[in-house]
Image 1: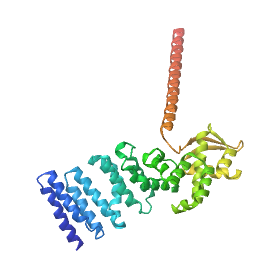
Image 2 (image 1 turned 180 degrees about the vertical axis):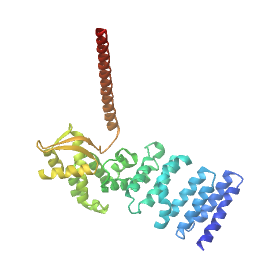
Image 3 (image 1 turned 60 degrees about the vertical axis):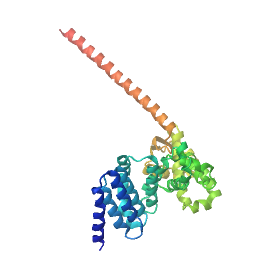
Image 4 (image 1 turned 90 degrees about the vertical axis):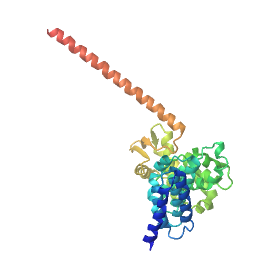
Length: 342
């Protein structure tokens, strides 16, 4: 029975607690892992449970990292097995810090997670998140020169996930060396161009791109109408970033390629997507923007935020000085009144 087998395997795992040293325990753990991952398609869920028991018994942090990684290998065998490990993904950052593993090990870990999440329904946000984590491990240094080429497929996948998503309107992909390499790649250059359009250009550029690359977009499962919807919202964000707080209706109709009577529909859509806070001045046909999501948030955006915080800080300091000055004046006046009364 499965229960008896699990019990037997757990007893075997307990051997690591009898080892004379951490190194010896690690060697025993490696042997157990090798046996448990030998035929991953056979009872993968049971094998993962046993590996988790082994994880908890091991004193070595590097051993725990190894065993968890082996559990991910088994999880790739099917949905039932994946369901055992997916709930642990929310703790990955804590695991990485606890294990103290280096960048190459983190990279392998994040890649293994993305390959499990890729086929999980309803987990596109988590999939995109771990693609980003994986790609962020490449910093463009000489140490990454040999490995970064292997990240092209995941870099392209991250771009497609971003373009597909109806919830994501900001990302840092353009700043990542693993993504930037696609610009000069024969296969993936159009995908990189698509990302640049969504993050730095407007609807007009997307429509021109789609005309020349419709087959490519279909091949990646991108729906033209959905891309137009997202690109209109992206274009509205671009307008918000370049206006002085007010956008004329005429500028919106031109950038979004819509009629005058559709402007308010797209404003409401942007507000409901939580990417824009504004008021509509119907009389003067203006949209007064108080906040918008920046499509990219790199160094220029940080510098702009720093400047704004500096201005706010100065304004607050001036207000405090004014209040204190008024208080001194009032106190002085009251003192004079007292002298006159006596």
